[in-house]
Length: 325
Image 1 (cartoon, rainbow, N blue to C red):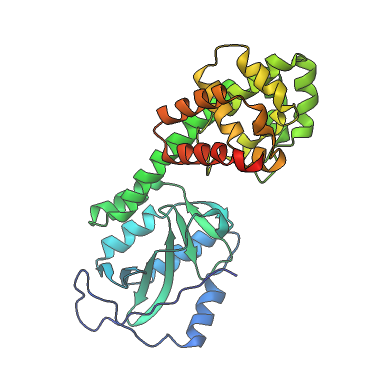
Image 2 (image 1 turned 180 degrees about the horizontal axis):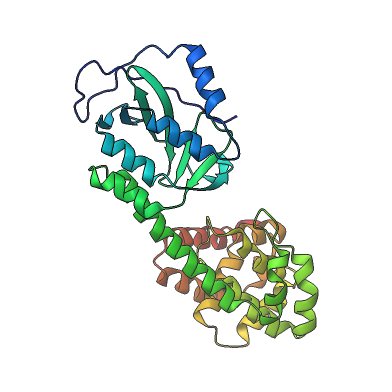
C-alpha cells in the first residue's frame, strides 16, 4: 500500500523561512471525503488538480525529514505559475521511483487544506487523491519555478539524475557496440519486463554463427567487459554474457585467453568472469584450472582500474582459491 502523508499547517502569523512546521488538527473528515470524491477523475486528473490549486490562496512547501518550511506564499502569481509549471507526463507505478517522497506541497483556502502533493525525486508527483503517481513532463519549466524561488534541491537532484543518465547511456552504447552482430536482430525480443535476457533464445544462433569456441569466447569476454564496467549494481542485461560464457568449459576459456593478446575490454571481461560470485558458486574448484601467471595478469589489470571494489573482490576470490583445493 502506498504511504499517504497528511500534514496540516496552521498559519496564524507570517511564516519565516526555515521555521518548523506547526502541528494542527486535521480538516474535518467530511470535507476531506468531499475533496476526494470531487477531485478524482481518472480521465483528466490534472484538470481536477489544477482546479483545486486555483481554488487555493496559499501554498506551503515543507521538507519532510526536518519538518522545516522551505517556502510559503500567498502571492497569486506564485500559485498560478506553479500550476502552469505542473505538466504531467503519464501515471506510473510508485515503485518505479527510486525513493519515497521527501517534500510536501500543501495548498490552503483560508484555514482549510485543499490538497497536498508529495515530490518524489525531482520528477514525480504523489497525490492522496490518486492511486498512481505521475511524472512531470516539462521538467525545465518545473525546475525553473523552484530555482527562481531559491529552492535548490530540485535542481540538484535533476543535475545528479542527468549525470547518472549520461553514464547509463554511455554504458548502453558500449554494450551494444560490443554485442555479437548476430544477436542484434533478436536482442530486444529476448528482454523480459524485468530487464533480464533469455539466454536460451540467444545461444543457438550464437553457436551457429560463431561455431569456433575460441572465437566465440573472445567475443563474449569483450562483450562482458564492455557496458557499465561495474561489477556491482550493473544493468541486469549484462548478465547474459556471463551466462553464455558458462556454457563453455573453464579450460577452453583459459585456452582462448592465452591464445592471443587481450584487449582492455577482454581483460575486464576475464577478470570480472573469474572473480564473479556466479563462477565461484557454480564452479568452486575450477579456479585451479586458471594458471597463476594468468591470475597475476588479470590482477595487475584490476589494480590499474583504481576501483577498490574490483580489487577487493578479485583479491578475495583468488586468495580464497587455496581454501577450496
